[in-house]
Length: 509
Image (cartoon, rainbow, N blue to C red; front, side, top):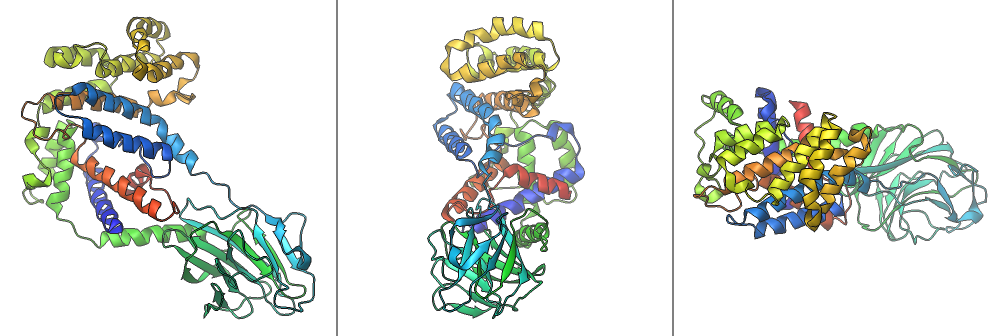
């Protein structure tokens, strides 16, 4: 069910962004979504906290609404943490400590192994694992061996084994292991589990073993071509493993320190395309997808793009009608459309004084409490804009006059400190607080003002409508589904990065 939800939603987004990217270049519609990914526990916790906060917000509690967007401002830091969390140490050499050392010799560089004994018994196997388990937070893990010498019997094997594997047995002969054997071309996956799999391999061949975390399969290659796949039953950590079992057998291991014979990048592209092809086969009524795009433009006050969108689709798209019970109420999100458009443009242009002036004129109730979260974000943005243009003396004066009063409020303390810290750097864009100078920070402030204005609508029926557009609610649901699916899979596989999905779709336009 989760897979079906994900593919349907991905199809949705592909349609939306293809249409916008193909037809419109209005700067008003070039914005980014909240930086959420499934890889980082920090971001996941922030995401869950945000969902809880949403459920507590109602149309009469504007201050809670503003604080929600204040928390979103803090999430600007999460992008770096997403990437940091995905860094895993991969195997780089053979483990000479945990191996059947009496039957093999590992080279000084720990990247080749030779069987030096005479094979007298079935358990006289020379087995060695990589120095680390295969990393799991990626689409695919892969390594290769070069058979320098097949020895007297060619009983070489490549595969994966668990940490407590018996190091005098071929991979695949014991539980929690899998091995592709060179002498018979069979795949072994535990006691008594031997299947005809592929060709044998011998001296001069390059053989690879990999784990496809998306499909939960092992796969093996020979001389750059895929031999076959097998379902991965083992859920715990797995170590890349090689075995030699007859005199003079010698192999060299490539953990990625040099190019593979197998085109791993192309394989990854093809795996992603398989999912995309599944998505592309699903049909979705055009008027439904266009209805979502239209509501998105309405919600964010992109009035000019909305008019262009309506003009472009007038003769090609059936009338857009989505039942009220499905969550759409156009009257809620067209409220004060022109005023919201003007305010968003002012904030995105960095003209905070003009934005404050318009708010005092049109919606004084939003800015009447100068110590509210909304006013705090606007004053912070004014300070940031002064830093952006190099007006440091004016920024210091403004900080003393407008930001100093927020130090006494614990909920504002961290963001105030980050703003003030901009003064300490000659190149603030490159600093740890440089995220404040990104366009996304302007968007957060603009979104806050936009939502606060929507919350003043006396006819608002859905108290959640001013938090997110309908499209973004689907995106959040997609993120939650991907988090859940990955969790059920033991946190294995490539992390879901919403920005990566959206960027890949834009690249296709």
